[in-house]
Image (cartoon, rainbow, N blue to C red; front, top):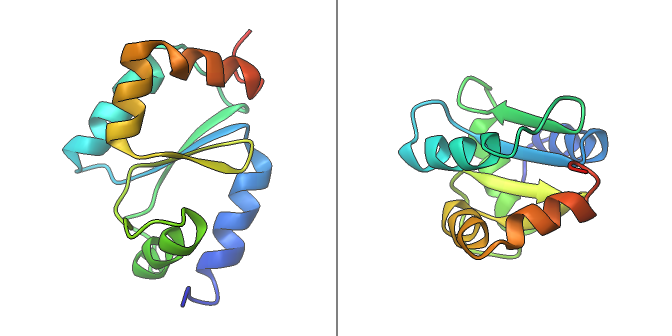
Length: 112
């Protein structure tokens, strides 16, 4: 189960931003996801990248992703739009390639 601090931290973050990417600075998959999302020119406060590896509850956060995303994947990157799980690096890459990512960003209100 998610730790006492992990769930409220993630839930609060999901309410604060239209688009949020949970990431780790040293992960090649996260770097790819950040580069793709960066190519859309997303800006704070609509978009935020949250690097979780320095947090004491990093493991609990990853455990909570399994519950939140209804998947057995707990590793980052994890992308959310309007508080809903969108996907990890594979989904981000695929949606970017087929044009769906830009459309989703517009619908989420992060892009015009």
